Image (tube, rainbow, N blue to C red; front, side, top):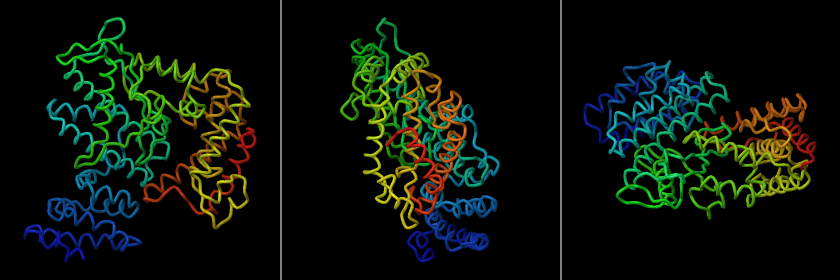
Amino acid sequence: DLRNGPQVRAMQRLGRERLDAFVPRLLAQTVEHEAPDLVLERVLPLVEKVARRSAYLVLLSENPGALQRLIALCAASPWIAEQIARFPLLLDELLNEGRLYHPPLAPELAAELRERLIRIPEDDLEQQMEALRHFKLAHSLRVAASEIAGTLPLMKVSDYLTWLAEAILDQVLALAWQHTVQRHGRPFRTDGTPCDPDFIIVGYGKVGGLEFGHGSDLDLVFIHDGDPQAETDGAKPIDGAQFFTRLGQRIIHLLTTQTTSGALYEVDMRLRPSGAAGLLVSSLGAFQRYQESEAWTWEHQALVRARVLVGCERLAGEFARVRGEVLGRRRDIAALRSEVSEMRAKMRDNLGTRATAAGTAENAFEATASFDLKQDAGGIVDIEFMVQYAALAWSWQHPQLLEFTDNIRILEGLERVGLMSPEDAGLLREVYKVYRSAAHRQALQKQPGVVPGDQFQAERRAVMRLWRQLELS
């Protein structure tokens, strides 16, 4: 099929000669794998894609190590195979084995991206957007390759993917700020001094909880601390509220626009005050008033996992203060327990598999049933809800429970202050890691986070026991 396909038939003579030289090398390495047909099925779309750009075939022919790594990664993960087939420029990442399997730490990531963007003219937005996307694709591949090779454990995989998102957001904010200021001038604070930038991007969900995965969306909230009434000082002045709204719109545009290298990230803004009906960007004061008087309990649960990703350090400190005050107030435990239980029951009914939606039903553990790692009874969300419930119930007595936003360290905090036994806290941490590891494996196999019902039965029963122990229903 490859030989007779339109891409190969349209090749020039030189390209065909390169293909003829490459295919025997490909076959020789493919038959070394346990499932050579599967490997070919995953690699051939890439060969077809680069048929008209045969320099890539030369690269793989002349670098047997790169070809070996390509075949190994495609054999291990259809997600990686698809990424490389869609974006053949990623083949360059396979040339250096040491670099491929050892992605850089957060400061190096940020510095490398800054250096790439500095080389691009300030007014060349198209090239800037491509550079951001190339950077993300390359480092995402390196993290996935390291995960498959075993050089990065699960928790570090999430750290690296989170650092990558933060490095990109930092530069996206800088580009959006520069563009908006050039058009409208600088906004002002209430004391009349110019903003610089008095704006933060807050991460919720997986990015807020340092649990980012392959293909995760960004759950974001934008907050500013400028004067919404004061006009900017540029040639086309607008009031502060409009300025920050346009800044927010620009950030979303830079992140979500589809270019030849795809989009950077899918963005979800529904956790902002009043959800989709609310303003795109809130002032810190408006955010605080909403959280104190209008927000639902589930919104406070979400705030447990919220943290500032990038932006103004002073405003980040103010956000941390507001978050601490909102989450750290004393609550009616019975009412809180009821609201958390009710929200979880709705989620199970709407998002879980039918067999486990009832939570305590025996058929939840039938070998024939399937188990949704995230949504079903005894799964990931049950652990997250227990952690959030505990933080809301007891942080007024133990403010250190609000220090971190990730579930593992909050569980460690619950153990440290004596609200959970070392055995129970340790069990929840280990089960949480096991579930997330399984979900990561499923993602790399392009599979949904659902496994056969005979898996993780002991773990699910343990989680459900602790759920009832907290008197949640």
